[in-house]
Length: 254
Image 1: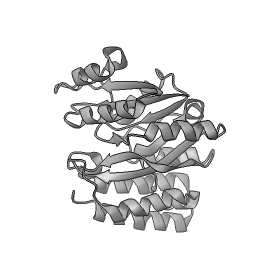
Image 2: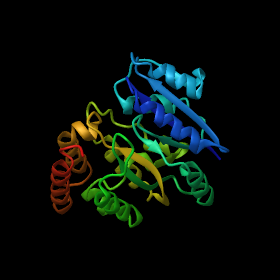
Image 3: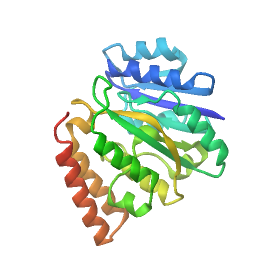
């Protein structure tokens, strides 16, 4: 099985280097394609990526954000299964082995999600209560729970290329910072995820990330996403409560 990993950035240093290194470690001994889109960085991001994964796998062009870059990268991928890792996040060392084994054992699964960790700018684990809660929710996934709040992490999300064609493109995050949440709901409407019971990704929570700097807007956008997919007053009410809670809990980095 071939896996494609995407990432993109504009001025992604210093985190981009560690992101790509984590993918390279996870890819050892496997058939993995690594693609990077650079939105005309001025900090050496494109040069760093070319050094690590080869210039042929790097594309430099303006984009409208991570979602737009991923949508463009998808047209270039050749893997059976695709993962998209934000440039400030990390893959766990054995992540891709677990992903390959899970999808090979479940050939009808269109998409899958694994467990994750939250780390700070220095890659130290933080917020264990929140992490344990989300991992519990992943292990016990239910579509209603997903409608009540976004319980799935982008850093451990993988999708078959043919299923990705069915689901379609990501919304651009300039229009919706909760575009990952919208995508998870759209995937769930077609099939439930394959749950991979291993830590696959590490979400880096820091002051300059969207989650670290725009959590209030992200939480509001999550409620708007929920409203676009359901009119159930109970689910809308639960989502409003959870979105407000997340905005409060993650309002300050640390």
